[in-house]
Amino acid sequence: MYWVGVDPLQQVVSRGEAMDLIPWLSIRWQTTCPCSGHYFWWDGDGLALKSAEFDLRSRVHVDFVHGSQARRIKAATGEALTRAVGCQKGLRPSVIDTTAGLGGDLSVLANLGCKVLAMERDPVVAALLVDALRRAEESEIEWCDRLRFRYADSAQVISCVSHGIVYLDPMFPKERKAAASLPMRVLQELDQTTYDPDRLLEAALDSDAARVVVKRPIRADFLGGRRPSSQLKAKTVRFDLYPKRKLTIEDCASFEEVIET
Ligand SMILES: C[S@@+](CC[C@H](N)C(=O)[O-])C[C@H]1O[C@@H](n2cnc3c(N)ncnc32)[C@H](O)[C@@H]1O
Image 1 (cartoon, rainbow, N blue to C red):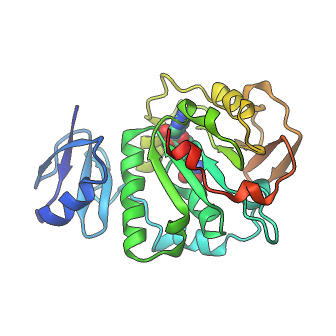
Image 2: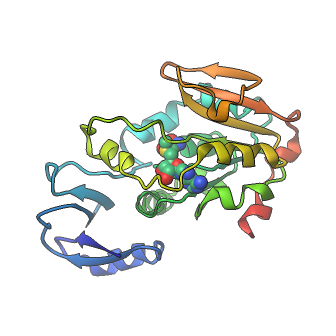
């Protein structure tokens, strides 16, 4: 399947270099916007996704260097997420982010000093994330050294995990009304035909990770009906904790065993 890409200034060299990092997408580039559907957009800010049904300024674009996510990364020290994965003085557990999405959580954790292996299985979301990570590396953002990314279905590799934290942030149940913003609409449209977060949790619990952490809407049922040992609550979400043993310094190692599978 081909995607349409719009590169109004024909920045062929920089675009080509960026696209080399995203071999799973086939994009036919043109200089004008299509009349319908979603399309990729290339400009000095890197890769974005736009839609003919939305205003030209609306876009899905991940940016770890400027804007709201950059501010969240800098501000996050004691937020519930970091406590949920067991960050404490002298201990920064390594985290497998099995549902990387647009990289909000993984960037906070890597910035705090956790080694993170992130996986995303949706080709469009993965492309936007990879391009944002490329720009963050080019801006010499220090936490990029602690981050590895794989375009993969994490359910396929999770059984190899031998230490650290397995983190799940599954999609919230689909709302029936159409989302108002383009990023929400795109996330709503993700292919969920083979999406089985209950099975992802079972696989995580079967692995040798020290702890499994699941992010849920504050009032949602437990994932897979599995009651956690404890919970940490934020304003609109909570983190369900499934500890299997005490965290040690061994849990701060990188995930070579998973990267090599
Ligand atoms: C709610 S979003 C995650 C948001 C992310 N935590 C953040 O902070 O930006 C869930 C993402 O998980 C991805 N996903 C679901 N199941 C997956 C799997 N088995 N392997 C990899 N990614 C998966 C979906 O494609 C979606 O992008």
